[in-house]
Length: 227
Image: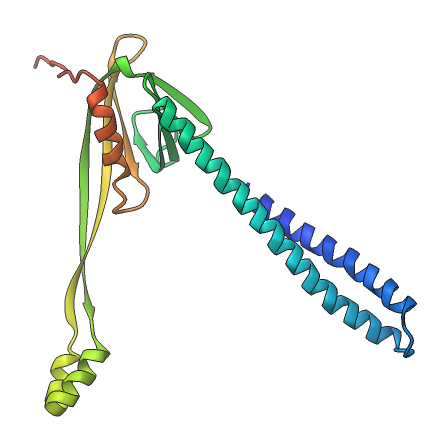
């Protein structure tokens, strides 16, 4: 869909440019009193029409962006009135018949949890949800970071030795946290099943927000398994 929009935008720009260039060539040819060559008229017309086409496209993009922003605001207000929450940038880990690692969008209404994934829409009644929880996957990586600014400051204050100490690499730790949402439910056959969703982007905490919003709405139960 995004590629189609880009192609359509480029096509509109080229069409506007071509139409405007033809119009300007004809216009300048009619008012040409200084007997300028046709090559000069065409060159000037192409340049001016290019600028005009850019202005038209910029104006169109402003209108389109404004409309998208207005529609998004109206959707948020409508969701707020109806008690609906939306969660995007999630990934299916397992438990559903959808492909693994496919992107997921979730809509949580007062009565249903809707999961859109892999071209399928899975609708789960809130009353069928027996338990929700989340799990964190923490990945810490260490890397070296040197500071040129500190080296310069060290050189100014303490000479070469200060520069060496100030610019020496420092060990830093980068912490990436991905959250998993674990949702257990009772299917139409009365069987206890579970599916997992995961944050697509680290450190966003979307699954955690989903679980925190969903948890107060259900009566959590423990599935008893006899060994």
